[in-house]
Amino acid sequence: MTETFFPQDSVAPAVEYLRARFPVGPTVGIILGSGLGGVAERAPTLASIPYADIPGFPVCSVEGHAGRLVVADRRGLCVAMLQGRAHRYEGLTLEAVTRPVAVLAGWGVKTLIVTCAAGSLDGAEAGSLMLIDDHLNVMGDNPLMGAGWRGLGASRFVEMAQAYDPALIEVAERAAGAAGLAIRRGVLAAVAGPTYETAAEAEMLRRLGAQAVSMSVVPEVIAARAFALRVMGLALITNRSGSVSDRRVGHHRVVAVAEGRVELVAALLDGVLSHLAEAPGS
Ligand code: HPA
Image (cartoon, rainbow, N blue to C red; front, side, top):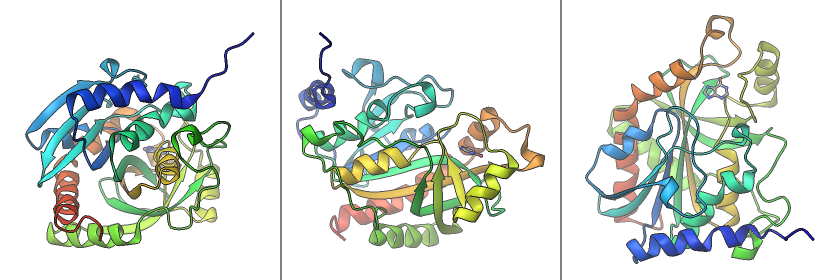
C-alpha cells in the first residue's frame, strides 16, 4: 500500500526548528532571486541558516542561489530573507517549490516580498526594475492543485484579482522616487523553463499582455495569497526575452546583471521596510 503524503506534514518540523531559534518570528519575508542574494548581506544579520539545516526545505541546485535563510533586524523590523529559491525546472513539484512560503506563513510572516530576475518583453533595458502589478501563470501548473496547503488553513479557490497589494506598489514607487530610481509597473509572465523563450514565444507572451517573463515568483505568490499574506513583487530585468542579440545570454549573464544591481534593490527594499515598520497595515 502506498503511503498518503500530506504536504502539511512537511511544514511543521521546519516551523518548529525556526521557532526554537526565534520564538518571536519575523513579520516580513523576502525571497531573493538569481544574483540578488547579496541584498541580505547589506545589513547586520541575527542568523544565517543553510536551507539544508531546515527540515524539509528544498535545497537550491542553481548557481546564483546561495540557499540560506538570513534573519535580520532591518529598519526596525524582524525580516526573514531567503537567499535563493528552488524552481519547477529543477524537477521539483510546486508543493516543494512553495514549501518555504508555507513555512514563513506558519512562522508568523504577514508580508511577503518576492524578487526575481526576468527577461523584458517591451524593450526595457537590462538593469531596469519593474514592480509586478499582475501576472500570467503560463507554467501549466499550480501549487494549490491536489492537497495544496489546505491542511494548514490555506484556501483552494483563491481570489487573485489583486494579488499584488496596490498600497505596497505605491509605497515601493515612493521608496524608489526617494532613492532616485526609475521604476515602472508591469505584468510578469511565469514560464516553467529552463529554456529561455524563442522569439515566437516572447511575441506570444507580449501579445498576451506581459511586460516581463521569469521562471519563478508566480507559484510563491499563489501560495502566499492562499495563506492571505500581503504580497509585493519586484522583477529585475536582466535581458530581453527572445531577442536575437541576446540569444547567447545565459544564466551567467543573468546572475552578473542582477549582482550589479544589489545596492539598488537593497535601497528600494529598505525604503519599503521603513514604511512597513512605521505603518504595518497601510
Ligand atoms: N526568460 C525567462 N526567465 C528569465 C529570463 C528570460 O529571458 N531572464 C531571467 N529570467
